Image (cartoon, rainbow, N blue to C red; front, side):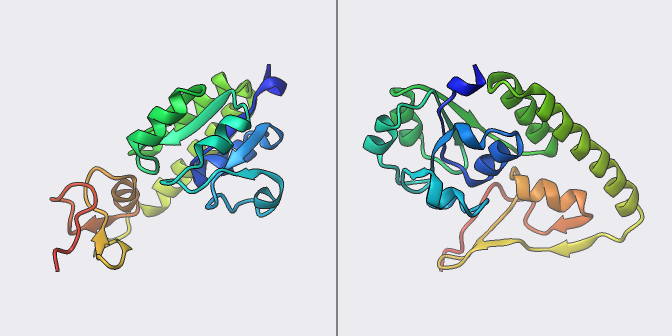
Length: 183
């Protein structure tokens, strides 16, 4: 079953996860932003970017699964991909969401043992980090994600979740998602 997989990843972080799960051989298509590990851009078919895909290239690869992310890929892309094959869309806000996604991928991609191993390692490191950070002072921060226009990470984002875990107070947490400077 695992050897029959033909995976297209339209998300750089998911591509890296697939490699960590031992699925590099099953990856047939990636985006131009999937730069880790470095050999993938030379060895796999690039099917466009995260927002601009080449649907004909995707179809020609005859994938069995396409992996997308709500944050990275448009609804139009997901719709087009869904007409080709099974298409899964992740939507992550917390580390728990990430752990659930790794578990889910382990099941649907036939690599449950490796997924469990990664989950255990993350949980152990997260517990150690929580002990380390618990007495650190809280600092006020702004997390810029883009320039022209200026954009920041506010509430309801994975970035905000990570800021909170690190004892950072996002001064824009009263706003939602990624507000832009109107100037």
